[in-house]
Image (cartoon, rainbow, N blue to C red; front, top):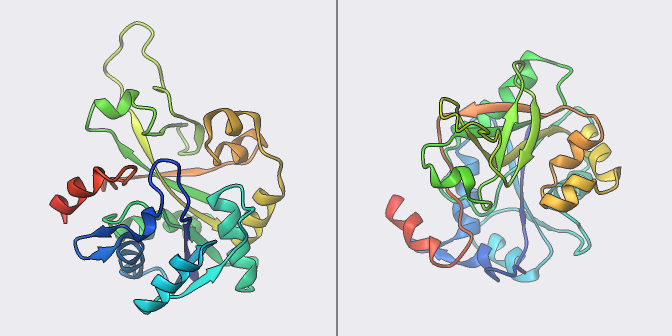
Length: 241
């Protein structure tokens, strides 16, 4: 059984009320919810929010939502709280869906959870996309990831990694898409950990996992997933719909 959770906050310094922004006649949260339900692997989709307006909007279009604490320090913590509200079993797979990527390909969810079937000892995976737009290599808005020969993450950063000291260009750069899959038992373990130093500096919650010695399997997908950071990004997404 695979449960997809979409963490969704109303407050945002750059784009307040972003989940309720209209994109081609539907709210962003509705588009993300509907894309998630297209995955053949997902058996249940739940929005996790801390705002009554989002909760009401989800219920209006027929979706399922739960109210979580405003004290959650990250989306991961909100997903973990939801998993416990739903009383999920320790061995169930929980998928963390990015709420600001309304046109992601549902096949990426299937790709991300496939390693759990191949390796029963795995407890966390995420997605990466080989960068095509060179601007994203150095843009701090786009998080980069490097991984080892076994497909496990070595580091995530807003900076360019690896850095070409001698102007080496024959190397691929990968963008982190921000989706995660976890075993529920490991999700509980993550949120019990203190905030890591690198996590705090880069403002990247996945670094908490690496800083405390755990592994994250990186699945490279051929499907990009553009995000909406600012109101002006909406037109770009609507053109792609």
